[in-house]
Image (cartoon, rainbow, N blue to C red; front, top):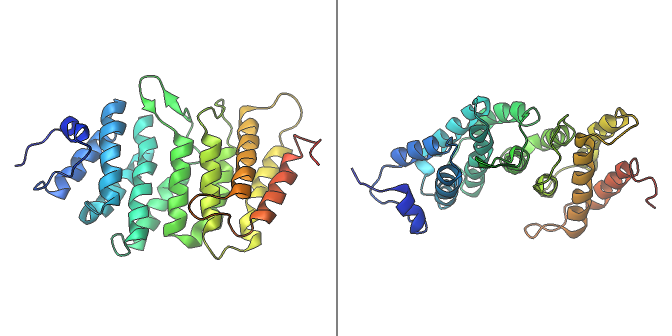
Amino acid sequence: MHHFTWSSIAAAGFPFPDGVPASRISDELSAMLVSPDPEVRDDQAYTAAARWIGDGRLDEVLENLGDTAADRFTHPEIQARTFAPLVLRCVLARAVAEPGTVPKAAAERWYAPFTTWYPTEHDTRGWGDSLGWLHAVAHGADAAAAFAQALPDRRAELLELCARRMTAATDYRYVQLEDARLARAIGRILLIPGLSAEQATGWLTLVTKALEAGGHGPVPPWAFNTFATLQSLHLHLTRGLVEGGVPPHAAVVAGEVAAVLRLPYHWLA
């Protein structure tokens, strides 16, 4: 059996270890992706997985990698749960770039556990002092955009999923740019052709209802998170994304977003 160490692969810039079965690499990466050590989980395993999945080196084990990740949304440890959507993002992006590598049925199979987990994850810290990046909100947003590419019929649902995430009750205020990651994901979903104006804006009904039920008094963290995300989205809709530009219906969505933001910012013209 070919011998290698992950630290030496990382130090060399992640050359693919030739002569090692993809199944062994997949198993080792999957084991490392639950590690509480951020160097093992993030700097080594995730960095290697993202590069090699994107390069097509792991096509024969893609579905297995996706199945393993999807099973982790109920894992007892937070870092295992929050790196699962990152792996799915890579697998789904590869499936879109190279049709036939992953059957659509597999993407649908992963969709259910993802959508159950994303709006309900209670530990939404962006960063943990010993665990490093956790980023449930941002990593889930990246996966939501990838699911929309792979399963375009789910786009309106995925926009609502993002709305449910941003309005979820929490004690955590977005401090690690989660608002921008959510805004980018919504922008990417809106960029996929074929959405009607109604579908592009319908998710805002959820946001409006949540805010109208909020009442008076100090701004709770979930409302702050929602305002921050909507402000970020308005900027993303105005400027567009480097890849894809300004989405269809951007003006309509931005107008509706501004209308929601007049609830807290009643002085807006």
